[in-house]
Length: 447
Ligand code: C2G
Image (cartoon, rainbow, N blue to C red; front, top):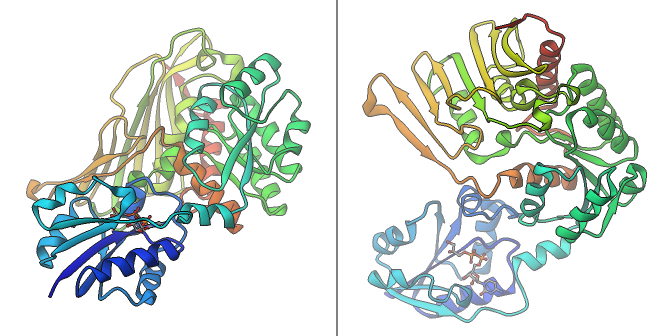
């Protein structure tokens, strides 16, 4: 019996897929179809897949061409499958011409003609309303955001707003956007959603005005500097049925998300202590060192570190105290001790003091170690007293990592989901509450 194998995502299964499966089946007597798992697709950068793996498997089965269906879940699996199932022919569409020649060592490799004029990408685009996004601010993070937005489906950045017209226009030209504005009201009228990437102290006002104008909002960190403002904005968003999401990039990256689920499922027992550090040196003149712009390492780095604490230990905070080294009116180093009923945690933050930026989560059975920079989580280890039980986990962290939060934001808009399990609104409020306590100098000592 001649066995043929082929692989694909088969999202929104279409005639191109069906033709390919038919031709592949005709090459032999038995066709095995490998359907990619959702996590495998995410790992290879396919973030826009619409159907989940069960739906895609069902669609392939319904074509009637597959004699056997397997799930493709890891790189290198093709070689394993070919050997395991004793495959004679590996077949794939001609868009992959040459890419799978390395399999010739194991079986015959055939590139079948691709069906022109149809693809899952085209179908996704046709059925999708594209969210028109406007960016408020044209600084460093906004510049990194535009290239990231190109890899996320269903969204197009169309305009930029900056009160400085020369800066707005330069940004528009560089990134080939449709328009540049200095006036927020004119800007907001042209878009469906807004990405707030302006200086910290302007976030609250821009978020409120965008929501009042009926637009969804993705807001950079620090979202706002007072818990009350966060509560008010989430209530406004809820009342208007709009998405408001804090752009806590680490909360959205695949590695960190898996870390949270592993810890929550008890792999290190009860969590008793967390140490999260984040330091990035900055040189003047920069807004991070400017007290009048709410500079300092707490406003800069607390949002991501506190996010980790709140996600892993919850919001029942029984105490918080801080030690800071001040320079020119801003904290260039802050150590915060945050207490929970049955756990303790510390954050070590610096913009004028350098330290190792790792994350250690200690539990009653073992600990998780995420090396610096832990906030771009692509690797971590679960370690035990018995080192033979240690496990290492690797993930992709593509580009600047902003694509993950944007993809979630767009998906929330499209599906009308107002809350994301990746960062609950109440968790975002808890982070703002803690930042407010620090800024109000509650339990803050200078060193
Ligand atoms: N295909 C085709 N004609 C089209 C579109 C797709 O012949 N118009 C073929 C592809 O060449 C591939 C199969 O259909 O052989 C599945 O395509 P996708 O779902 O896009 O999956 P792909 O990303 O190509 O996965 O391990 C996964 C594989 O490496 C390929």
